[in-house]
Image (cartoon, rainbow, N blue to C red):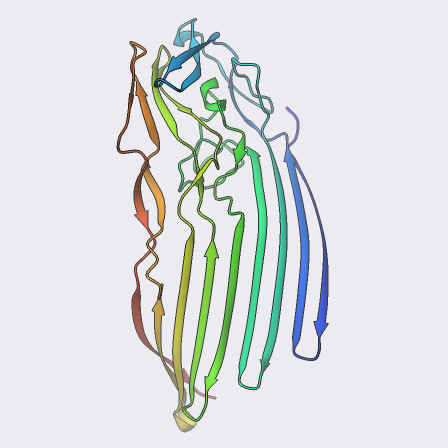
Length: 301
């Protein structure tokens, strides 16, 4: 077994524009290889095809030697039944640009934009749209991805939680002659990547097969705006207090966070495949618009 390794480098430029504004731009590249995952080194598989509908079919790996022959091995290499086999590896490219206006004249402002791409294959490449990106099969979240060579079908693609576009802007300003402070935070994220799947009954059991690379489809993008209005109040020698009102998700974005199912087809042991009319089915959503009132006490000097 080879030791997993990661190579990373970055280059950036910071520049001050006048006395109150600064900007920065940075490029980051990260490559990982020789990650460890499961393979079946005992079972023998034949590559067959299952017809999904009049226009589509999917190749599956069918166990021909019985489940008693299966022997699962942790290693750096993947074992599939088809010619297109990929190793566990990742590549990340990211470009980050930011601008900051320091606090002066009663306000401050900062913003950033990130354009990135995270692709490859990891033991977590078979996870759901809301699943975490992991590079290990070890506890506390043990994974069995790779024990069935069907897991490797279309597994090469965007990694879980890959978000090509991320934009943030935040700032605060004094409201003249009132003592109030207004703050805002806006964030935009590309939706999480996912892929349609099929559930296929095979001799080794009920098997999940990806019909397309992850990232072929994405959840809805998220646009989140949060606002705060606050006012400090002096308590004399006792200290001071601050009253504030937060309004979260002002735009009331309703983007989904996950899917109840990504199964587009179900194929029985008779090799007949039926389309699932309820796929995809969103299961979680961004928290709705809400307001919170609060008071903060700072006692003493």
